[in-house]
Image 1 (cartoon, rainbow, N blue to C red):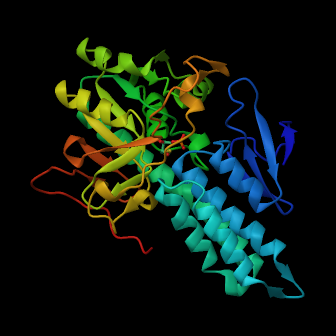
Image 2 (image 1 turned 180 degrees about the horizontal axis):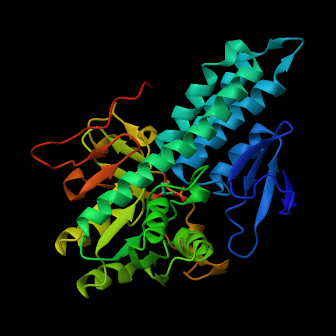
Length: 355
Ligand code: MRU
């Protein structure tokens, strides 16, 4: 995997992912905010490693990386007008399994594999179409979510709390929940964003703060455990977060700590809004009990910034995600609609999207 430092000629001026001369380009999210560097991924193995190590992260982005990975595989396994479909399918299965929780990954890989019989160009065209769709999907969800927040917080600019990173780094465009926050800022409707640092990998501190600073949005960083206290002090008007997988009943898997935020928000009567594309819905699951939550390396918890902070041999519980029950969610906003899981009347379920 080659590392290209960003230059004026970088094919990734604003995007997190791109295709360039038979390779996948990806902003290395592990290096931010210290360094903005671009990875040139030349093999499926490197794409898988980028996904598992969180160089590429965020549900929509890992889906798109998976799709581009299938295109990479299709080119590598094609010669003389014939594609070794079995080898590409084996790569696709490994790409799908790189991270288990975000349903976008398996969905995107499946969608590109369907074009395999038409050759590698068709697979790549499908992956590129998905990148373009992500932009329109983001835009539609963001506008809808910003309208919703304005109606939920009608009295003036909102104090918004957010968790993890759901911005342009996590997608191929403006993002989901963070995109909505930036849209609200552009409408003059953000007083302040409180950013959870998001232990253990600090996606809030490293990535969301970086994106907010870049967009000129006023923000403050807090440790995750300060969020409930901020709500109790009346510092939060609305919580906005993303999703990795949403079950048919509206239970939401998202970054570890999201469930705690939802409990605290409910305690304080604060709207708790999820912004996520239709591709994050998994309607095959009746509820969140069936969602596989990824457990990650104990070292992410026993060390901080590379320095060991726990006694040798300390056992660790390190789930990357949690599941927030639908009853704690005020609304789930997608590109097609607003779903209010516990509204007794007028619930609008986003339309079914073919698997
Ligand atoms: O482990 P990560 O950083 O990939 O987790 C990401 C999240 O939990 C995001 O909130 C989610 O994927 C939505 S990104 C638009």
